[in-house]
Image 1 (tube, rainbow, N blue to C red):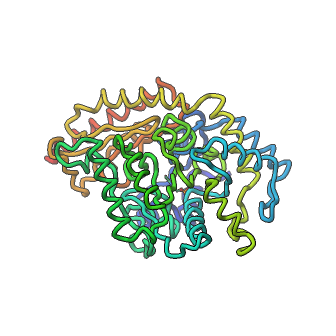
Image 2: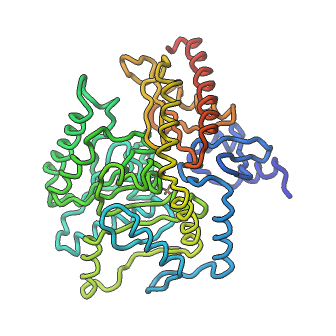
Image 3: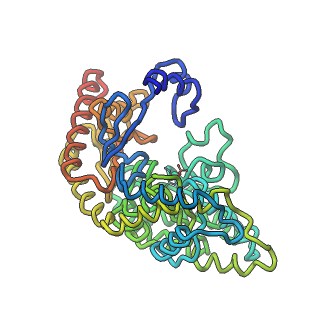
Length: 464
Ligand code: PMP
């Protein structure tokens, strides 16, 4: 067996880590965390240190770590048939069962499910389906996809282009052409003085309509959005937002792609974010909670209306020519079925609604009056605290102060993982949906100590 030091050295020499300062890591300025085990809402590293995971990995381990029934379902399928492809109508029982339940569960009038491995590839598939659909309908000019500022849809070429956070584009030649951008529905930051949530939503919908008209509706194919904006800052929509946006999309024959990668399977307190906000999407993207990340699996779910056009075109176009070696992997399907059994049996959406309300209440109680807290927000089991030096003026901290990252680090020093969101000074929470109220108390207690520590430092620095 390798020692912790040996594992670390091997890793430092060989792994190209996502979202890691490469030079700092290569030169030893940052140390690896060797994650060894997980149980419930906690993970343990190789030194035996245990963390409470307030972010469920990357908002994905919704059923918590160490669920033996999921591990057993994976093992059973691996022993029986570890792999076969799903090209040319090959399938497995687990795959057929999973597709059937997703079509029935999903929001909107869904017809078929295409399987991938990640949220990024699933959104890439959605873009191709949108283009295919309009080609088949004889509308080859109708191809542009509108995404929102600060939306996150992945980091592959098209999904990364749909992502509205510039650091995913910089130095990597993104975004590609044909992706348009509209405003983020964040009332706290975007509203005019005195503007109500309803009026702000109206303004965002009007901006969307103006964009579609300026581009020409005959060139705009789809609008992609997360029901609750996630990586861009955990931002629930202002009231009236989704009905107004959908009315605009309908008027101009623009498809709605609901990116449910975070929201899907209970995170918002409903089975899907779309259910919570009355969205009727044409295409639905899911990943993360689909298998609670026990194995990689994503899905692009396609409505009857879109699928019908694809099917009818068979005589002209032949086979649907898109697919991955691992599309519909039987182990992924088995894991998803086992996870969805838990989600349904234990009513995780209902639990997320109840415990999410408790979490938000606790965060508001602890932080609403804090001198550097601008907004405490959330829905279901996702919540965020946004930090500002001056609550009245709402201006952000200077980025060099790295306030969000310092608070996240101070929490980590106390064995809590709460994520510094990559845009602005925002601390995010998205724990397993199974987290108990006592564990929520523990998480909020540590977060409070972390914020207090950084607040003291900021006073000492004269930054507030
Ligand atoms: N869409 C959303 C809403 C996401 O949050 C993410 C990942 N955070 C993705 C897509 C991309 O998923 P993946 O990282 O699995 O490619």
